Image 1 (cartoon, rainbow, N blue to C red):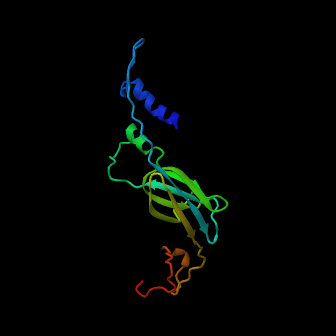
Image 2: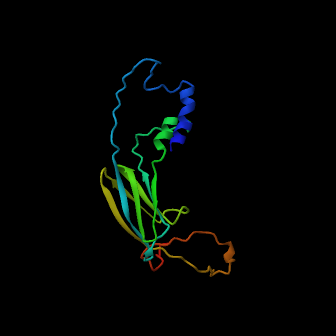
Image 3: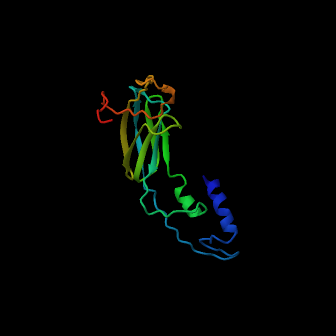
Length: 178
């Protein structure tokens, strides 16, 4: 945490690009009034089931929604990097199916559930975390797999067929307009 901040800020301070908030000369006294605000944070707790079992090892992640106020950056703007640093929060589902994410800045987030660190989300939704409160959520996810073979009616080689397969919930027959 702190070492990353210093790695970014030290060259700017030493190069004169970042001014100190207060300067004190040897033997002199200086008054510096500092206003400190308590962070507006909340938390998210809950449980995740996967196919009826505790979803041990799944990840629950909160990604802040872009409010449209941020400006595009060329990648070298240290202020933009600092603003983005550490904003995503995540937790891992424990063996009993529960998770907890503490110290979440109040705001609107995209909540994503993934099976471990890899792969796309199995579930996502928008949530709002309020200051000084705990958002409780329970999720029951169902996934499956598909196996089969491809056959052709016209005698062409099935290995040459290219395409995609889409699974649609509650659809048991192929629509005629496909």
